[in-house]
Length: 378
Image (tube, one colour):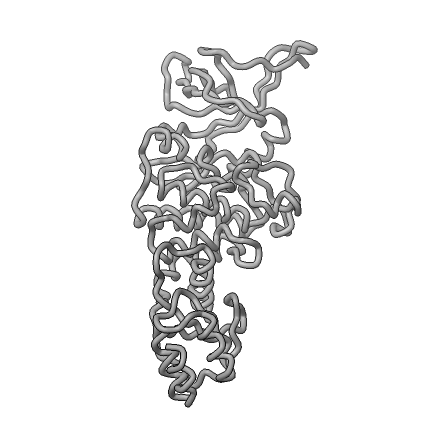
């Protein structure tokens, strides 16, 4: 075998049954091979047919893997379509050259990275929600059979008729236990911190990358793992920001897979965080404060609530039963944002949590005959 040289413009590459593809020009080159713009030729070799993307894989293993996953998602409009796969051989003996070739549809609208460069973003929230839902449907099918993509980055998510389409399954992997799949390849800038220590990649990590992609679509700026703290600055609806936060959150709060994330995306907007009916008594409640109270400081409220027989918690948890929500003055802090994000998600999942205002809390305290204490601090 001799070293495989790059294809040249005008060169013909033949599949197993003699169909020819004519190389037009190189598109890109990476660790998994080279990609070219090419055309499928007519049977007589005189006319160009459809434009395609011709990919020469770096190794037989890469070729087998990407061809396999390409066939699994064939027919799904949210995936770049694999049209052909073959090994092209030229020469004989020691001069033989073997190329492991994949033929994909040519995505002439480019990638999300191209859209950023060409100032075609941001998109409005309605469009982003719709496109996220479409991608999550495909990812859900993949996750259900143990497949993780591992490279949902702006450079690998394409556009077809303005819709998001997943491409480049070069580092996609399949495992019987997708939650504990060992990492062999990934894109560092779009990888959660947990992967660096655990060396494991599961469905939740795919959702993490999709959360970053959502930020890119909404802002027109490429969001990678280093920009997670910027999520709280997004000027979007609270429920969508909550979804992005959970998609990119630490392991205890993240969505488990695409199906979990899809259910959240469609139902979080139905969750209300408005103050509702107060419980009959404050005693026995597990209370979390968020925002600023109108007439009490946080310390004063904590003392009064504790004296009334309730327990004050610093963060929303499995035992939380009551949220005292005050108005937000100035910019929303990350900590306060996390509390409300957690409340919204837990309400969606069915946890029984009441939300009341600071005024309702004061009335409850007075009703329980500690009004003297209340009056002394207001």
